[in-house]
Amino acid sequence: MSLTAAFQIGRSALTASQVGLQVAGNNMANAATPGYSRQVMFLQPMRADGSGRVFLGRGVQIQDVRRQVDEALQNRRLTGVADEAAAQHRAQVVSQLESTLNELSGHDLSSELTDFFKVWSERGNGTQSDALVVQQGGKIAQYVQRLRGQLTEQRGQIDGQLGALVSRGDQLLDTIAAINTEVARAEAGGATASSLRDQRDMALEELSQILDVTAVEQPSGAVDVLVGSTPVVLGGESRGLQIKRITENGEIQVMVATRANDQTLEPTSGQIGALLAGRAADVDSAINKLDDIAARLIFEVNRIHSTGRNEKQYTTADGTLGFPVADRARALNDPDNTATAGLPFNAVNGGFYVHIKQNSTGQTRTVRIDVDLDNINSAGATGAQDDTSAEDIRAALGAIPGLSASFSADGRLQVRAATGFEFSFADDSSGALAVLGVNSYFAGKNASDIRIESSLQADPSRLASGRMVGGTFVDNGTAMELVALQDRSLAELNGRTLSGAWRDTAQAVGVKTSAAVGELEAATIVRESLDAQRAAVSGVSVDEEAINLLQYQRQYQGAARLISITDEMMQTLIQMV
Image (tube, rainbow, N blue to C red; front, side, top):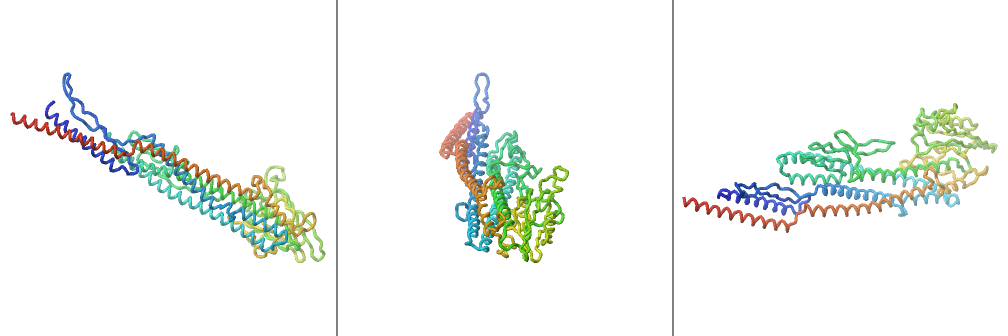
């Protein structure tokens, strides 16, 4: 080995030691840096030089400086982070929903229903006034509207969160795409861009909190990012994220899609996945259940109240449902009838009776109004062409001596008794009167607009607490019918009572809340376990790096000593010459 070769060996050792010191120092400096992966210098001997049977080493060279990561573990962590974020937001949604329903507190819908039927019972016993019964109806209507408003507000909060998360996710996709370009450029010569990869991993981890993503590394060093099977980043190109809103059955549905081609994404985890699921399965479901119960309360109470009466019958009765001119001649069950098609309740085949009393003689006449809603036309084929319309009912009522019927300017049915006559309705097997809102207690169609009927609000004496039973007027007949409604199983509520259906809804929310808390605890344990595994592979041990510093220091000192000795030998050789 020549002295020049000795110099080169020493120089290579000095260079390797310097880089080793820099790597160890960088690791120690970033020991507490989130997302930093420990870097390791890999050395290899230079190709030996020599001839014959003697080959002498030429020193050391740096093969690479690479970060220590387990790619499979990294992908598992992305899933774990997404699942924990989803569980956390899911728990928040259902916990807030449970607080909004506030069941078992005494200030909840179950209590309001109990109080509502209780006041009717007291009216039936003669211990409460008509005005108090009307006030109690207004109270439950206001409570239901307020509860729906709170649920709608929670849905609005979720929509706001989704908008912010989608905006942040869109920014992260752009960041990842930009880093992909830098990584591919930096690693084109075979080196490893450790810092860039750490930055990208941090962006991917934050993105996984928002969406459940999968990262697939390409030979260039770039990663493609997918949500399910849909790519959202391809190399250096981000396809972006956006919120899509569409209206279905009057309700706004929210979806997430790519900006590039408007392709709908279906995240199943992450914050967005949890919020989308919570919006539809929890909040929207609670709103729909509340609407169903409110609609059934409106219809069933009105069905009973519309055929009730007091000892003195009515001289006027107005409907609450407005019919546009074009819909008045359409059958009540015609899908094209815009007045009835959107109602959550409907009339059926049957009829009702009208009792007309002439005051001067005391004579009462009873007339049956048939309501044909069998969806069979005169030719025997399926169709609503020959079924009963609002105009048919108006004409039938107007044809009764002593009565007149017309439509108001806004299309509501109006029934008037001639001077000296009074009337009432009875035995409505069709539910048509309740659909039309004639002589009703409530107005509206669901929880969004339930309210006391305006004429009853203005004149509580119109409250129909009595009714005809077996040809005899019973002073508290309607009140007792309404009390019995409290315990009546309704087919439209799957055989449950009004209170029972709501209790089931509230209990389901409670079960979901308990399950969500358990899922969050489990997801947190899994994520913490994955973090510990990552720390074991990629984390920095200060003690280990201190040992490396000493090792590279000794290596540097040895290389410097080699160069010093070689220099002395070179000087001796020069002096000899």
